[in-house]
Amino acid sequence: MVDRAQLQRLAQEVEALRKRMDEINLRIEQVDTVLAEHVVTDAVLGALLGHENGKTISTHLPIGSGVSLPYRHAGAEEGVALVDLGSGIFGERPWSDARALTAERKSDIQHLRDELKVQADQTEASLAKAATSFNALAEQMKQPAPSTAPPTVEAETSEPGEDEATSSAPSRRSRKRGMFGNDLTLDD
Image (cartoon, rainbow, N blue to C red):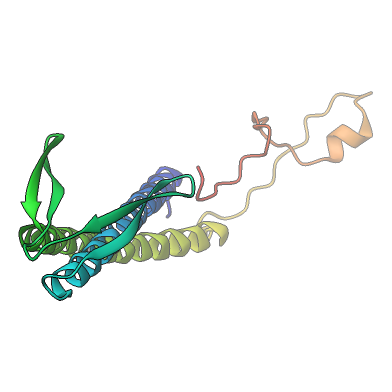
């Protein structure tokens, strides 16, 4: 026989797994955004490094709100970039060092994304298993339990003068019902 508490526990497990799956997917999206930034940074640094030495490089750097600042690099030597070294500390690094640092960070972030993807796949498999178990138990609960006891005839003990409508209605035990009924859903 299927126990309501067991079904309730499975519903809670399914809901917890759904929330976990949503959190993992959100983190994957955030990591993808950071990876995309690193791809752009690498492309810009690659273009700067690939430019012919000895020539002036000129571009515009966006600073936000549709405003760009002109940037000019003149000379044969490699330019420098301000690089976040961690903990809010910035340092000047040659473009080649900045590019190498960006590539290393990108690799670390890609590793993190791969780990999140593995977690997402595992959580999705667990969610599918729990949802399947929930659905199977819910179906079992819907089916009437086979009765092994022989049917009994109850003697009527109605008082004379009792309302006919109440004596002919089947007796039900009164039960408090919530605002939306007492049906069990995955949200319970």
